[in-house]
Length: 317
Length: 195
Image (cartoon, rainbow over all chains, first blue to last red; front, side):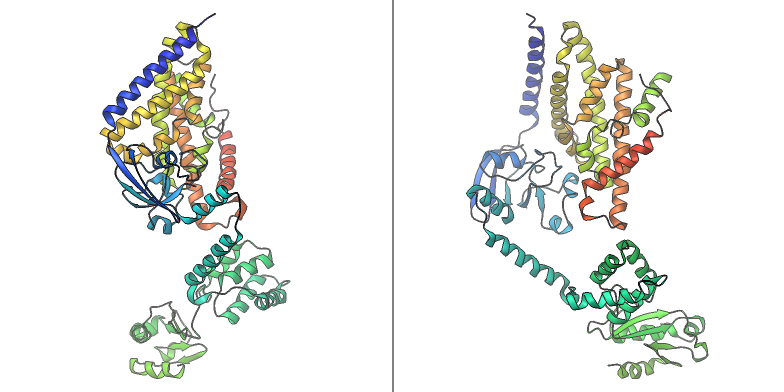
């Protein structure tokens, strides 16, 4: 029998092992590091030899972090929060993190090397999953808590302009769509109708329109952002348009605009907080004879002076 | 010299290791979300593939062939690749901190990547000379980097402008993009021949 392959194999393994051991001794020496782990239901502290990846040290100490790719940073499941001592976030992790998570110093446990004392927090959803696995039981109450907090957070995020489409609103949009469905270039008419009803384009209404019209959302979005008259943000009840056409500009349209900006406390294209006024510019409203001109909704004011601006605004307050 | 050039062009375009052989798909799909990451990964692959092929060739031709045990070359290659990458990473972490920051962190991700092994295996199958092996390894890795950069760039743009159906987001759309790019690379098909 030929034992040569076995001998060669072992020879190579021996050389490799010796080389790696020497390198390990000579090159890597971080000493002992203390890892403090905080979880929802417990806190643990242990000392490990530095130089390993965090996930390996955690697993060795009976703390399980979910991971399916085996530390190759391709699954992104082993997210934990590093409170201090983990170093900068690596480009291998960045693609798995949202901006919020980056800000919270979330890291992938399989990419953090333990080089000094480290302090981590394992998020509670992991604890929950761990308990489900450990007790082999699933507590629907826990999930219920998640749902409520999620909704609350969503509501806080959107604050002012949350428009959930309920049934009556759905039918309103359906009516608008049905009215123009068979016309050529129907989308524009429908969008105009929506603009008249809402004053702007709420995102979920646009989604619903794209669903009803069987158009890609991108298409609807493209049309709704192309025209100056449409807006994706809520706009005020009264829209002030300051003419910046040649003759109005020469006659001081610019100054009128500035004084309006100062009085309302907003910039061009923005809306006041009480949703009463929106400020815009326009390139001509066909009243060059009365320059400088300002239009509010459908009313036109000619020969506007800075001193008259207050009177105009008062009418709409 | 002409032969080497042919091998290089073939490895980059006509026999692209990612798009023709579909090797190294794991990091290809996971890391093609941002151009910057894909670039770092590409550089790491070029480095590792060229280095391991250069180490594996002498081991195969100077140790395994004379000893008459070519049949264990799979397992030897894998061990050598894993060990050498580990070693390089340690050295880099100690002495070349700047390099470590730019592409060293990708090294552990590709220790046992199939691209790396495949290049070493191809060099045996096609019985390349030492120089040809290095050129082939370098070319293959450049081809892999090219492929991941193309997909990453498209993917980055795609996420900004398009409305991808929910089920296709992430790996799904990357598979489709990679498929279309592979079709495009098929067009290079008749350009050069590789034995």
